[in-house]
Length: 192
Image 1: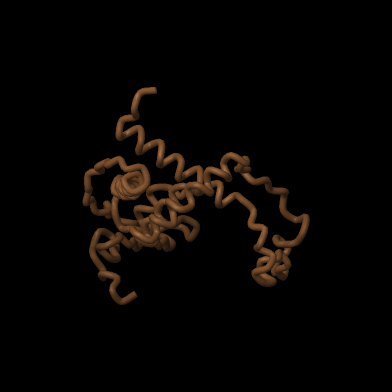
Image 2: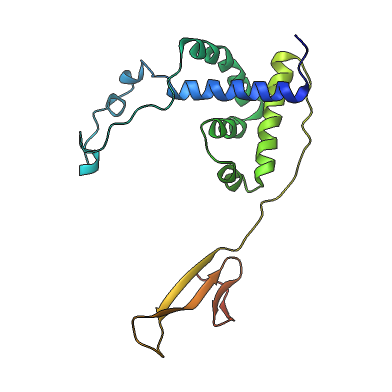
């Protein structure tokens, strides 16, 4: 079997970590019942939507096999080392990515671009590879700030010139610029 290229090794270990994290999230915890009344499943019903039989049945999307659970147990020390050496943020980032959080949301949390979030994940995986497998993979550092796009929120008011049923935008908030009316700046929004 030919040796893997660094890119293939990075991709393979990243998928191993993703599969292990998905397995850990889907595996049932047999000791959960001893952690208090909230973990026993006997929580009070606050609304009709929480009542038994009201909602449709749900099935787990991922049921881990015995081999996947065994592999997750072998990968758990990698994740523990990752948290100890690179910090909680690295583990939280990789866990969120593995469980399907979109890259744009991760980028929004860290105030950077989507490419930079994926590079941070790759750097964490490369650190795991260097520590546990002995191969050195370099992932170039990318310092790319988040793209700030203005957000818009319209405020509608009845058009005074016609009937009261039609509406036109009277005021608009442009993110980072403030309130505008009829193309003129009203105020910056710092008072809010």
